[in-house]
Every structure is written in C-alpha cells, then in structure tokens.
Image (cartoon, rainbow over all chains, first blue to last red; front, side, top):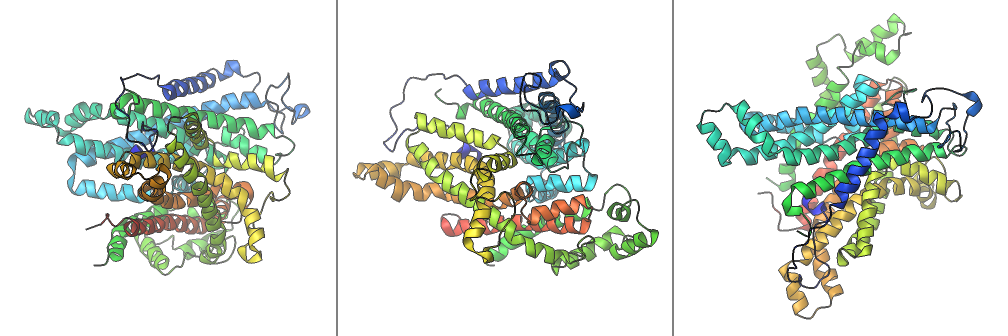
Length: 295
Length: 313
C-alpha cells in the first residue's frame, strides 16, 4: 500500500510506455520545501523568546479581541494575549511533543521490533499479537484512552502519542530485522561469534536506519497533529501554556467575533504537518533508489 | 472450516488484546479510582459504595474476568453521571457516529475516485500536479480546523447549514443531510486526500500492464480500456483501503463531533473523560475499537468476494 501511495509511476497515458529517455535528475522538491518549512518552524520555536513581541501569557483586558494590526500583527485573543507570541511559543510545544513522542515510539518500538524479528519464535508471536491489538485501536482513540488514564496534560499527551507510535515502529523494525537476519553479513557476524545484542545493534540497526528515519519523519507530523487534536479536546497541553490545538479550542467560543484566533493556529499546524510530510516524502525519494523519479 | 469462522478465530486474539488494554488502562489510574471518579469532596460512604460496586476490594484478575463476562453479554456497566446503563447510552449515540463516518466516507470516495482517475490519465500534467499538491495540503489540514473554517465560511454565510447539532434520520432525510453535510465534508476531505493518491497510483500501475497494451492493440478506445479493464482492477485495492478508512473515520468522528456539537459516541467518550465517569469511557472506547476491528474483518472478507484471486488457504 505504501508503494501504491507513492506518486512515482512515470506513465502519462493509456498508450504503451514510451521508450526510455535519457536519465534526467530532477530536484527533490518535496525535500527542499519540507526541509525549509521544518527549519522555519524549528528556528522560530527555538528563538521564540527573542522573536515574540510580547509575553504569550500576559493578559491585557484593554486589548481583548483586537484584530490583526500594527500593535498585534496577528491580533489578540479574548484575554488580550498576543496571538503571534502564542503561536511562536506554541511551536515549541509542537516541536517538543513531536520529538519526545517520536523518541518514545521509536525507542520502544524499534527495540521490540528488532528483538521480535531477530529472535522470531514464540516471543515474536506474542509481541506481534500485542502489537496487532494496539493497532486495532484508531490512533487518536488510543491516545485518548492513555490520557484518560494518566490525566490531561503536556507530558501525558507526549507519553500517549509515544505509546500510539510504538506499534508503527515495531512493525517496521520487525519486518526489516526479519529480512536482515538471513542476510550474509548477519550470518558472517554470527559465524565469528558475535552476540545477538551486538548483531542487532551494530549490524542490523544501521542497515535499517533509512526506512526508520523516513518513518520517524512521517511520525513527527502525526505527533504534531495528535497533540493539536488532544489539546483541542482539552486533554493535551493545558492553559495558560500556549499550544496550537489549545488556541483553536479557545477560539471556539468567540469564533464569529474573533475569526483570526481560529485561522492562525490552524495555519501553523497545517504548515508543520505539511513540512514534516514533505520532508518524509523527500527523504523516501532520496534514500530509496527504487522510488526515485526521473533517474 | 468456513472462511468467516476462520477469520473470526484469527481476529479473536486482537479483540482480547483490545479488551484487555481498555480494561487495564483505566485500572492503572494513579490514585484511588473511587476518589478519582467521585472527586475530592466525596463522602466516605459514597466512596465505600462505589468501591463495593466496582469490586475494587477484590483482586484485579477477578475483576477482569468478571468484566469480560459482562462484556460478552453486552453489559457495559452503569454510568455514574447519567445513572443509565452505558450500553443504552451507546446505542442511542451510535447512529450519529455511524452517520458522520459514512457521510465522510461518501465524501472521501466521491472526491478521490474521479480526481484520482483524471490525475492518472494525465500523469505529470499541470492538472495532475495540482491534484498531488492538493492531496498534500488535504493531508496537512487538521479535520477540526477544516470544520472550524467551514463553520466560519459556510455555516455563518449560508443559512442552509446549521452551526451545531444533529437531526435524526427519522426526523426527515433532508434535515438529517443538512446537519451532516459539513461534518462529513470536514472529516472526509482528509481521507479523500489520502485516497486520491492511492487511486492515482493504482490506476497508473494497472495502465502499464500487458492486458492494457493488448486491449489498445485490438483497437479499443482509451476511455473504453480505462472503464472496462483498468478501473475494474485498479479499484480492488482502493475498495479495500476505502473500507478500512471507515474504521479510521470512527476514530476521527471524536474530534468532529466536538466541533459541530454532535451528540455521538465521541462526545459521550469526552464527556465521560471530563466527568471522570470511567464506566462510560471504558464502554465508549471498547465500542469504537471493536467496531473498528470488526469493520476491518468485514472488509477483509469482502475483499475475497471482490477479488476471487485472493484466498486465505
């Protein structure tokens, strides 16, 4: 399915494929645009304390619901807080939640998947049934279940999203480990007496780093979206800490008098998700030569 | 053994894991469950009554087995906030959630099929690139934000679409459709964006097959080859994925119901969480997850009916 979802089928009509043309290397546009968007968001999040015109939590009753203008480029919210400053600081939440959730998901998932795929047997069967069970939950539902258990909050949301990502990484790592364990370099390592842990960490892991990196990039966009959804539902980052999803929730009550409050945070989420998705696509084109277009 | 029975047996462990995870997730809550549910101001006698009712003084394994037994009989417990059986609450809300999910599915397939086929026929043309770019954008836009934008742009300007609420089908199909359109569009657009790439890829792949070359060699018009041959084969994986999306949309409705104030299963779940009514949370989660799993199973079985080349022997 992943293969089908790619847009790398260079046929233009129902006519038989044209004779092969001279190879022509195209610019990897998704990679460039994705990297630019991600860099933009990461830099603005990192520099938020210097870029933000005001304190993102400072309440100013006199400046309530001001539309975008000279003093407040993106307007203010119903408590008079500067929307631009809140968006910049909200970017920090998005980046941190994304990074930590992917680290949890990748760390636990890859470990489980590698061990499962490499050892095979009953351990593999057991772990995979558990993974199948977790994958039987719609992702957001599982995240909500975990938050319902741990209580709402920023750290809980990160943990919940990380847990949701575990099966995705575990399946990928397992499939890669299963394919790698019969390869000659693994047999050679085993023949010279290398221990299982060393074979997994030193020989198999670097060989599957490419697909894992692509998965991590795509998972990052999913994590940003999930955090925004949880915060929108009031289960993620809690006020007054600014988060893009939380800002959209706050905009709900004043939607028709302060439309800007609902526009900018949504744009920020879309830009971040688009950036990470494009980066993932671009990396896939770069790292998987079979899918490379026009080469 | 018949195929249905074999597939049901294969899905049983997954269902068990789903049930176990749902049960355990709400048993490992930090602190005293009774206190969490009733709040810090609860009277000691109420706490004691709830502990007795939930069997919190008994071992976890016993409680789990008992809960599984009740679950198998369709008994999901009684809500402490609604004072009603959770199963009854769920049955009342299920049509809303299913309507939104089905409506979103119709939007997703209705948009993705024609766009995907047109894009594939003119692969790498400006129109195709626009579809691909649109699909990237569609995947990036959060469903709830699109819902908010629809409320801002359409519901406020066109009185045809209500801002909030739901009308049951029994109240009249037109009214039902009026309330369902915006939530379905908001939820379905993101799925359409994912599906359009699949349709395009699948049609393009089929177009490189030998049978297409033969059909064209026989002198059949491109449009006829596309309609009679390519689409029939290309749509098999699309149908499967579209079916699986229905389950995915069950999860997506949780947020959309909140945006449009729809009294569905997702809203019940959230109200359960806000009120710390864990019986409701448990019931809603297990219902959505099991519907998701069973929908996947149904699609799996349908797949074999649609494509006779696939067997599970």
